[in-house]
Length: 408
Image (tube, rainbow, N blue to C red; front, side):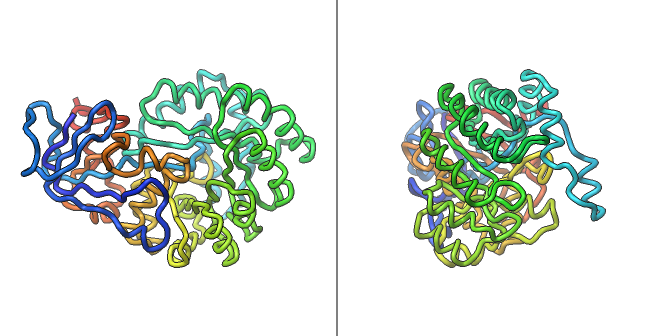
């Protein structure tokens, strides 16, 4: 496949996360083409220098913008049912309600096939909005049977959909009703984890490290067990309070620390020294009317910052990475170049994929999005217009979505 008449081909470069002001260093090639062979990017260049090829076999970008496929490094995208009553009550100032446990009840009642069909439609919608790689956590089962059920659904989605899925075991998402926390931690480590490992159901292990959920010492115990079982580590850190989750992520060598709305200066420095990617989730702050993570201070201090959606049924029912880019620019004072890097290369690094995706370079996987925009700076400007300006999505070298075709 060849994409021609690209007005701007815009990409960060490299095989690891960019830190600090290097996040602004993107490459822009004007009047470009991009050639794909065997699912990989084979060649990039200017149209006037192109080799001879059949225009009839090319995808014409018509002067639009091409960017890397978006990478969403933090979601809870496999679940069942909705929580609109909780959402509307929260909008009126009422308390959080049962929260996660509401979805747990519905997941436990649903069959594996019901959850698969429900989640498949959501992932297809994400793909149409340019997300070509997505991390998905379990965490709405909260017992061995249902956590494994969710992980099997994630595995089946990975096998049957063109979008790449990175599976994360997040049994330590909350404590189920009627179970002592110490007993539940024992079940996570002694029952769930061996089966997750033996059935190869997850690449990462994650813990909601927060007061009222899993405290620092409890989170450390669980994460150390995950690491011993061969899982790479992620952590929900400092979302609701400055508990020290960022420092714990650095101590244990986590791949990423996520949320970080209340990260301390010491936590920032610890993440920087340890090379942990800071994954920020502005959609959650938007949905909760909460303070945003201090992205500007993080980047200025030299951290590698990524963006994700935190797509979930309770605190952020937003799955558009383009919306996250716009929020990052509008609410977190990131430049558009920083936000684009955070949603592509750095997000890929947050799921250990920066060597194969996240940028448009020869040898990398052909994950990219064609946009009907005059220039890349219009991405955050046209906030909420994704359905109009996403023209085509190519995932692993395949054209998986083309807007004009989808209308027929």
